[in-house]
Length: 128
Image 1 (cartoon, rainbow, N blue to C red):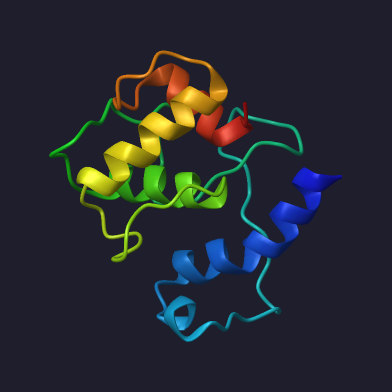
Image 2 (tube, rainbow, N blue to C red; image 1 turned 30 degrees about the horizontal axis):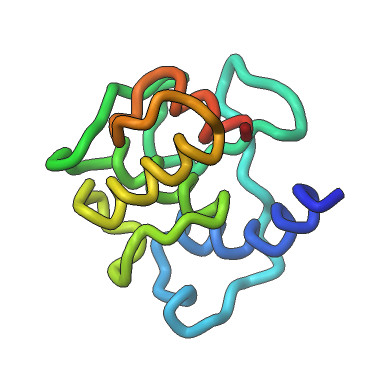
């Protein structure tokens, strides 16, 4: 139930980010937009997809990477409640994103290395 509430309150933020608007910084979001869907090949209510990278298993990313795969990871980290820095979802895997990834990995009790590979992607999309 707690996960469902977190999803409901975060869905507007995720959708706003998907739409590429700056409503997040203004603290508003449109309630008329629908919730994000799971990627192809993944099912279940817990599956989360932020829509930046189309692959079911995105490439392994680490500090210094940029692009849509990083945006998706940042979106998912933020969705699960981890702070990704003052610039938010910017597609730059910097220090804040690295710290958030490590905190997420520690929370999920998986290898803590700050690298987002297949295991971390799976946990980001489906929860710990």
